[in-house]
Length: 593
Image 1 (cartoon, rainbow, N blue to C red):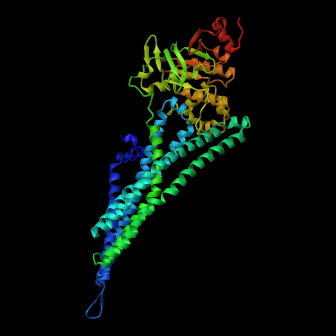
Image 2: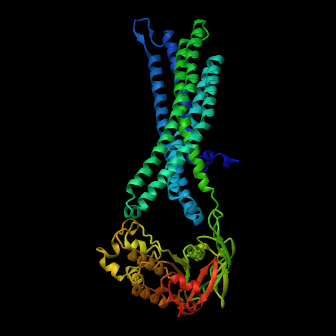
Image 3: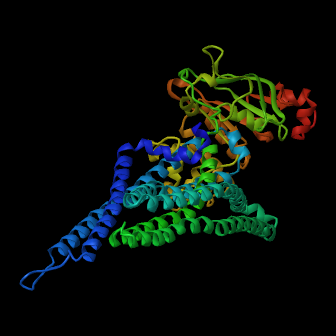
């Protein structure tokens, strides 16, 4: 049931901080009660002044102002205590709201990292960023307003209306009724505000996505002189976002004043009806003045709810988008079976995979086996499903049908879906063609795979990846900052550093998904021969699956697998496939014989 109220779900995170929440709420009770007490005291003090009891002339002609001083010090004391409580409550509410927002953002980041690749393919980077930034900021604004408007304001309404009813029943009931009508109008308007903010959020997603693509694809844009078109496209997205924001603001500006006017009628009622009560001797002047002060405070608080309702409408839409992300199912979850310590090969048993979103079938009844220590090349036409096959090995995605197995014929096979996910990914690595490096030093990037590695070990990894020359050319060696995505390096240098990072993890199974495409034949041969000679603990060799269409790469493999029509269409050495398979010859552009 609570899943239908995303903003309430966000606020319920406060349950994880019970003592701080209770203390903050208690302080707001003190603040609200203190306000009612303060104004009740003012009314009593004014009555004593009006009746001539505050300052009394004594028989000797001197003035006795002890009652006046009593009221002065009492009011100052109450105001001081209330001020300290209000300051403390305000600070604690901000700290508590920030703690809640921090926990929510941590959950978003953790969940995004846990979602399978299919979800990321279906949802762009711009959408992910806007939900973590804009939507979280909208929710933050609501959290800041929560304490003042949804905790303190109801308490103040109860305290002030209770005091007014204590003076006279109708003096309090009419303002209460007008306040209820004003709030009802506010609530009726929030649904439209919610719809408008959803449209603003969707437009903001498109702005973020366009900006991300414009920055990430800057090389392509410059290469094809697309700057003017991309700028025009971005301006159109911004203009559309601004128009949606204007419509939301115009609606709020035109509708919010009505309920504010309704609530403000309370002041007129207190002034007129209270004056009648004073005239009839049923209410003192001090109580009348106190009632006017109280209702003024009430009106200012309720009038502010108009702006707060807009904030909460925005936050409700943002919270809905955040929880849509957090409720996205984790299609890939870790199992409990430990991974065998024996050398690992890989096996696909009648595996079928569909494109994300239920599209066409990429792999269909695909089967293959690679024994531990074997070097196998996988070749296929563009779009044949080679990268999808690679993503199955460390469970970056899962097969709809069939099984992905690791192990060997001698020691037995294990289904990857039954294994502990962290163990599997520590021993099965896929190096993609796109070489991603973080904006950090070379050493920090390499130590992602081996956090405790010494500088000497890092140099060994670079040597294994034939990246010695890269290290020599960097001005500060291992401590050189590589820039955003390794922008200071060439494509081949980035690929070799990514290879070095993977080799430092000493994986049992290493899949190179076109990860040597930017290397020359000599360097590529050196890297693969180094991997062939790489022995892990207890003499285990690395099983290597190379996805490539380069002839020089295929010649280095023990076997070549041909992927076509979603399954392994042929298998053998390069010479054997050239001899018997016309599609293979056409794919590589080689002639028969």
